Length: 261
Ligand SMILES: [Zn+2]
Image (cartoon, rainbow, N blue to C red; front, top):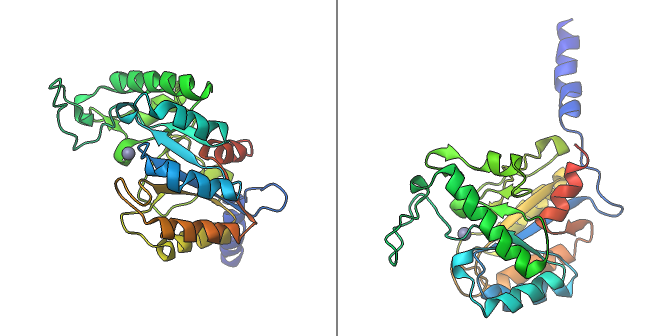
């Protein structure tokens, strides 16, 4: 009896809990490349590199950094099949300082959940004006999800304000459709000065699991939280050499997995 119980525990339960994701023909895993803050180096050093291999990336924009001149640029990025995502207007984090112009506190602890959700809705409107899309995905500024001490991610998803919300700073991946929590999508962060050799092991881990993984970048070859253009290109080359990996937008890959839940 004991042996039978051990058999069920070790062989059957993990199989039930970890049903594999069924990928489209020829694909065995997916990587979602995401780029934050609307850094301008992404136009020069990311979009052409993605386009060369028909890879689709996701760019999370923040309203306070968008200028009139940026809008045609981002519209062009969207027209090329990439995704524009919501990264709020003011990029409120726990450690943000007061707005120097208005004196208004932009730290997350100064917000209520309602204020945060309103800001995200306004940013959705900006994004729709640029890309014409009705629905957008989201990335938590600084990976922090509490406004005034209350979680704002779950109500944001439940109210249909955004479809999926990305965290940061974790090496977790989505190995099974049951792992998919739209309010808490894990992402591997490429920190400043990261080499391709520090990012590729994460890609290998995702491939080995037959799962889906998100990688988070900021500036490439400039701006902030910068990864060198050459190192980013080495990662792109690695992905291009593995045609069994689907490099798709955050929303496309996650929606595909969600249909299997
Ligand atoms: Zn950010």
